Amino acid sequence: MVKLNALELLKKKGKSKYWLYMQLGMSYQNFNKMVNNETKSIQYENIELMCQIFECTPNELLTIIPD
Figure 1 (cartoon, rainbow, N blue to C red):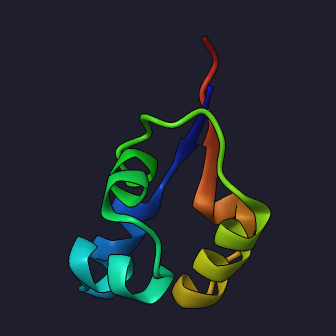
Figure 2 (cartoon, rainbow, N blue to C red; figure 1 turned 180 degrees about the vertical axis):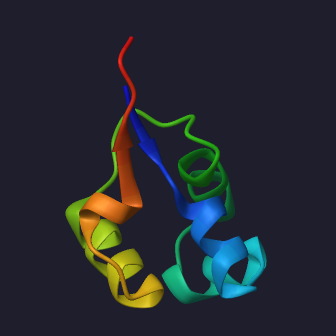
């Protein structure tokens, strides 16, 4: 399973979920599913944008958790 570390990175930056939601400009339903790891896919453009926002690499943004 691949886990998105957005909530952890938000804590490190001292920012809120709402702040990230506004930065990404996507629907709240899709955003909420994505940050809570309830989605099956994330578009590359969203991964790239989150890496720019968090100033991180995809390796820091995503973690592989063995099933």
